[in-house]
Image (cartoon, rainbow, N blue to C red; front, side, top):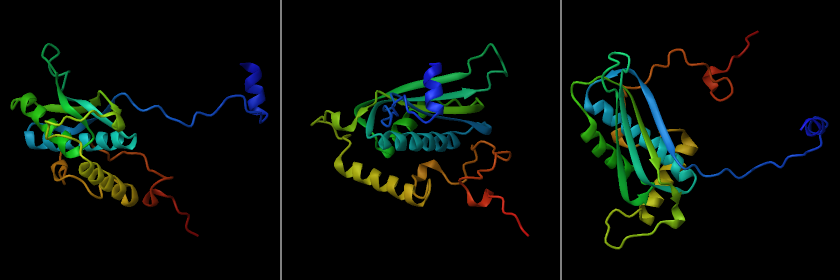
Length: 203
């Protein structure tokens, strides 16, 4: 190992570069809320937003998912004896990467999980049962196929967001104001990726 390190430092390659990244077996998106969320509408927006992010990553690796998990959390420190984590899994009859269908399933999970008297601090969604989109076995009797038309629509959405910036086009169910969004007043500047954060010296 020491000899290889010396050789690498002298410019002689000893290790092969791995250019192919293995597809993820699970894709998770979660955020803590800026303030406690109590109404179902805000939770619905958050779930839709998280699913949109995860579905885009799913399509980027040309995969589909067959299981959706939704988790809600309250403040576990408010009462250490009470339950603070609530979750449910939604099996997809036909694996898909269609954001609209996944959001619909996520909201169905939320309908079962939501309790009016709780103050939620965090939500998470996770896509599992991931397989390549080329290996999906279709069902002639199902109306929930990930059809070529849906595939093209999702591809157009991803192309637009890649070209013009994240969320240039998005589903209405993800909301606009996003009152649940985490606080980012003290977020570090993005000097290398955001024009507005670049320090410019003035003479």
